[in-house]
Length: 263
Image 1 (cartoon, rainbow, N blue to C red):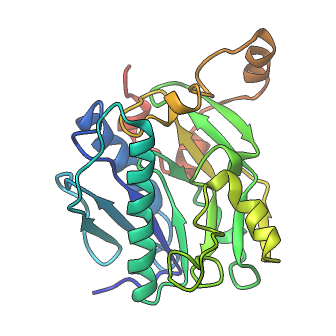
Image 2 (cartoon, rainbow, N blue to C red):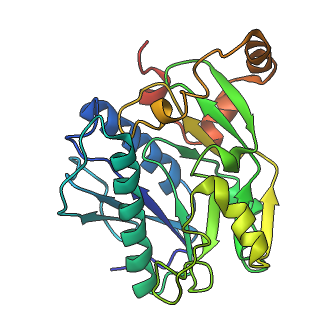
């Protein structure tokens, strides 16, 4: 039985051979699934794509698993891990298109989504929805960091119409790229295509940092959120801090296991 949800959330999962801490990565994935599946069933379903399937996934009409059989990258091969993630997302997009899915969202296996998203996004009148703001958070801590220009630093920041016009290369109708570009390049490409973009100002996603279990993006980016580059950046971090309240936990459906992680 297939889901009739408006949006298919595609989650690329790194291989067990790549993860620095596989059990921790699986716990983070569970937090992401709890958050996404807390959204209305008519709004979102989930497709997970990876090498080894974690135990006890809530598989069903709203959550599916697709196994891949190519060799995973080496643990210290950051470009290879980025490429592996991209190929998994591409397969998810192609599979979703073949099933008639109309909208896709790419979400990392440790990020969290606001339950306000279905009310705030306007899919019918747009080609893409962009999250202008978001949060970063290290699981187990009591503070979030507000992140402006969130769509430039986190991949879990776009909802995109699944059409040949926006995914021409991946869907085999052209040799240029639009929504299949990196998240920090996507806005410019969409504007160039005269796409209709809805920008949501309220924070719609949490980018979890600090655990470094899988893809090595923190190493690639200098661990942007975790390293104090200067006194000015430290002050900016303090100004942008926001307490993890009960209301925010409810909004992002954050499970107890993530709040107490490391405590």
